Length: 288
Ligand code: 13P
Image 1: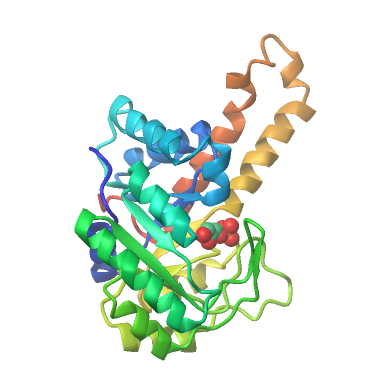
Image 2: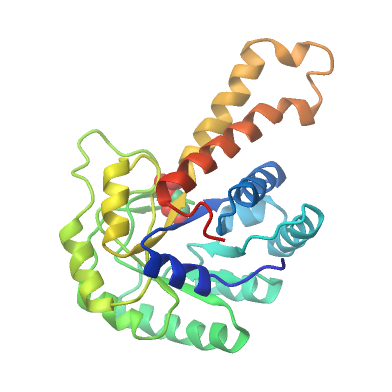
């Protein structure tokens, strides 16, 4: 199946009280692992690409070529959206041109009026081309491609203002943080989430910083309208750990252990297991 935008999968997720996982990709191995797992579990999936990862993979056109090639050659039948993660205004336009099926414009660091105007323009472009668009209100904490946020709670009125522009999904800060959560993290603000959902109705809400949020909080967030959950750091951690274990066990020195296909195989398997675990928690298994 060719790439799809994320609208239908997220509308179904919101109505069915489950969430679709956005798993960030960084290279060929990750992409293949995520696609094969989604296919095996018959789950819809969103492949997230940060601007930094896009640059690393030689630019957005290379990413589109790789993903489209895999959809065909791996015979993927489940719905897959290719989504720019935390895009700048310029990055969003480049991804639209390159053939992404979905973009995120993160205008959360602008004053709300500027976020509103830029989001509005991009909504117009995406609607015309049939792409889905995610907007953000209230910056998400932690570090993402060098941008550090403080884990704010978004203003529900501002969320409504941006949602009413006709975005497909809305990321709103509810105390979530990218990367590993500090020990003294107070947890998600369900009060804020509840207030945002009350103002935005059917709008699928997005939870960034999916790494390390306890399962019970994930389930509660889904029950309060979260329909898309982003995971990146947890995949990075298991990939690094599995690769390190392979090398530390001296397996790269046995037979053809230095072959990059063998060297990266344990990490790739670890990503598959992590994606499976997350899809089961999010409830998207069998929902393709
Ligand atoms: P984590 O790296 O914390 O999993 O967050 C990923 C994310 O939100 C990408 O936008």
